[in-house]
Length: 280
Ligand SMILES: [Fe+2]
Image 1 (cartoon, rainbow, N blue to C red):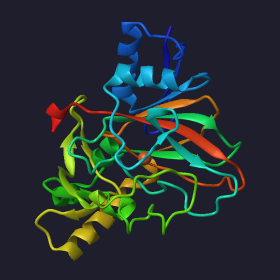
Image 2 (cartoon, helix red, strand yellow):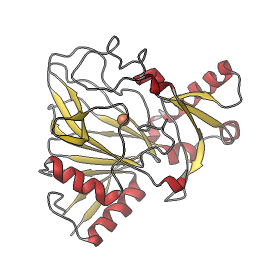
Image 3 (cartoon, rainbow, N blue to C red):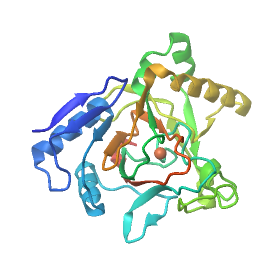
């Protein structure tokens, strides 16, 4: 029997009573999907999973998405690794608020991460509930943001000049660095979630500009927005355990990584779930 226990936090729930290393019944998949839409971040502790199990579970939630700038792990083309070796001292990967691959024409609905090597402390992942962030926004601020279109781009991260290019990032992560990353894609800043219908803010660190606005003014507004999105009242701080699987809804939450595990290796396996192109 699947149990869903809501976190004492602005988003997230713990899912128990299901073994993801075996095929699931239709009803179980439906219960998990409902919990995912209701709580935005699902945590499945104590799951002993192989890579094939991750793929099978992801495919219950939608087709597996493309990972344009992450190289797959050896032997499994649909899975990438979030990996940091014990002797790395540089920047933590993905340590600023973002929605995964939001610069795509059809960004992924969800992302799955599975803890393979988890240090005893540090490496928490933060999630910010963007429905709450919108609902709690003061009316005068809402009026400034609600009609805007954001310009998203991965250039600052994955182009040859980006933060994860060879010259700017040293570490175990494997990237596909390409100037394709400089392409831009517009998305509304405020929009209804395509499945649960709730309004929310869609944006994070891939937002580089606002359509039809002076760039300096756009930068000011984007800064104001991210300060708002970062407020504690919207944020769930997730602590990892080995053999823990987490899935989240990129249309509802932003997320960011954190450090605090210097001298320890950390490895998670990652897949994205493609969204329905009809929503875009
Ligand atoms: Fe991410």
